[in-house]
Image (cartoon, rainbow over all chains, first blue to last red; front, side, top):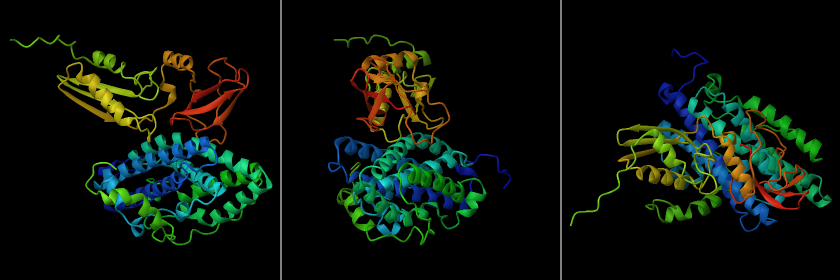
Length: 265
Length: 170
């Protein structure tokens, strides 16, 4: 390979191993977005106030928009069909993180999860803007501009809950304690991903995690008055799921699977 | 009986295509067109074939197919035999591309135009300042960070007490 580390690459420049690694990462990113959007969508008609019903529907719509960007990146590499990947894979084939699978819980759990996830996504995208894989750098620059609004929204809710009433603070702390052990998985390398990081094709997850801990930890401690536990290890890989994923997919995929030949669902 | 003659269309030039596209309204904010919004990035004319490159404002925008259809219809209306509508993400769309006179139309319509986005501060936990489109006061409060469309938020002006929508600064 003659390319130096400063040159940008396109699909035709990739080695087969790099291609496989990027496909795996794009699928993991898309699966996180799809599953979280489904959880957010469960609040439609049930959020505490109408404005939040609308906000979560907006956020879910953006997350699905980002999922389709990642699946288009994958399609450029292997010609796969984004709809088939979203609607016709079972839980065992999904590669989402366990954080996004957890049931929606109460409003505190929903908003704290969104905050932890939004910050991780925004910081990963910020780093991915420098990817040498040109199509990813383009998608990252686009999605980051949208992600900032999610982050502002969920950061404000974390503050409202943390500094609201004793009951809201209790629920926010319980949510944080429930979610925190799952957060580290967002920053874990996929198998064979280290080479892609070394080649400048994907962000260094350790650097993203350090920025995330500073941003999220600072906000939760200083603006939300919450106790932030130390971050544990990432645990098992993304092929291991909680029992909550399969029922979520059954519901999400029901219409598509009942009418597999339909053009749109 | 002979068929009625069609009025000859204007010559198919990039300028004519841009003019036609300036008549395609944004599906969600009809007081501005897709060219006002800076969504049309390039126009190429080769004989009777026209290629229009546009960039989506928000990646999850549900109006994208309406915009594509609007572009195709406007260009076919000029007599183009072949129309290709391509989309691009690079460079990413920014509200800084919204034309100056379109900002004024947004304001008159009751939507606060976006503050300059620049290229910094994409990761920030506090929203940018906004001015009331009716009384121009900065003394406003955000009541919902997500509005009826992905591109807007909801505010109330503390000075004149009017609720209003503000375009997000992207």
